[in-house]
Image (cartoon, rainbow, N blue to C red; front, side, top):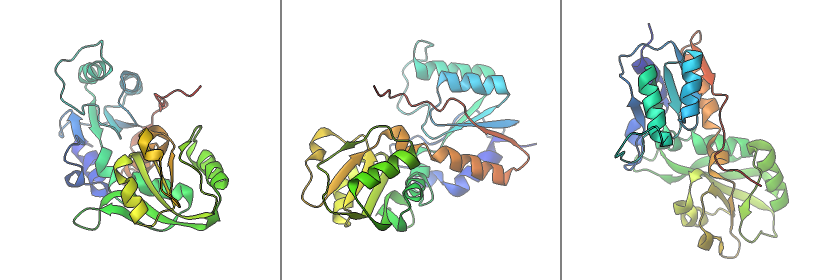
Length: 259
């Protein structure tokens, strides 16, 4: 008999909850560690549609990157997507767990996956925590210098990027690249000081695009920069429990629509 705590222990061996950011809400959000689990559905955001998919497929544990309950909830209502998902999960007896910044801060996590898709070498953490082993973002080198156009093509091919917001493009080839999956605006100056010629992240605000000479920004979108974590979560759970029912959701939908 596999319990929620068995699955979460496997996840936390990879991304310990103790390293999550102080403002975050990673971990078990709905359910008991003692609940029996017959199947795990992996998603990116815990939407009402994802809970419906889990219930229909007999999955009694949902594991997502983003926390369903992030900030304080003052009321739970079916008219609100968060409240609706909470109600559906509780009624169906489905436990909900999120990894969020715990998986952001391990080198093999969100930003590390991103770096792998870009083919970066000599990858290291961009902003290490005090322990030196965990932290936000990564920095590394491309195998060979690429032009801005070549990097744009690589991002579209490897990360499914449909649109890129960018600062003034560099005219010289780029070798050193820093990355941070998700909202990485706070690491722009850290990336520049670390020697990055290009910093790629998401949710970058307008004024940050006024970049100094020799440094460039690209914003590829929040979903696009983090979605690779679902494959990692699937692999680590399946490796630990090879005969167990684990599936990545069929509803990994970006809420941002591009026209």
